[in-house]
Amino acid sequence: MTDENDDASGRGWLRRAGRRLETAVVGCIAALPFAVAFLPVLPGVVAVALVLLSGAIAVALVETGRLPVSYGGFFRWALATGVLSYAGWQLARLDVPPSETGVAVGCWILGALLAVAVANYRRVWTRLTA
Image (cartoon, rainbow, N blue to C red; front, side):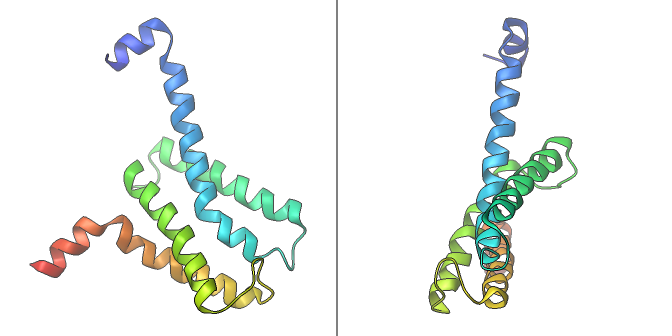
């Protein structure tokens, strides 16, 4: 079934809504360690708002084409950011939520930077093996 058939049958809006929801969830996954890092200094409601706001921003950027990455690349980056940030916390022996906000944010930034290589693994592998 093509997108034209979906639009003709009225299901195109459902696909677009599902895509936006997926993008928002992925944006929230990437921001979760960042928000948790600030739990010791921010109220929980503000930390949750950070996660939801980042998801909304991710939807806006990906859907409007202002974020020049594919959805798959963004998805891999977000998941790798969450996993690598948490791994950094474990290596630094931080509690969850961490009591040392500076170290926790540093782990999140490092995880997000390392996640770029994970998201672009094909390009990185090509350069390494060329």
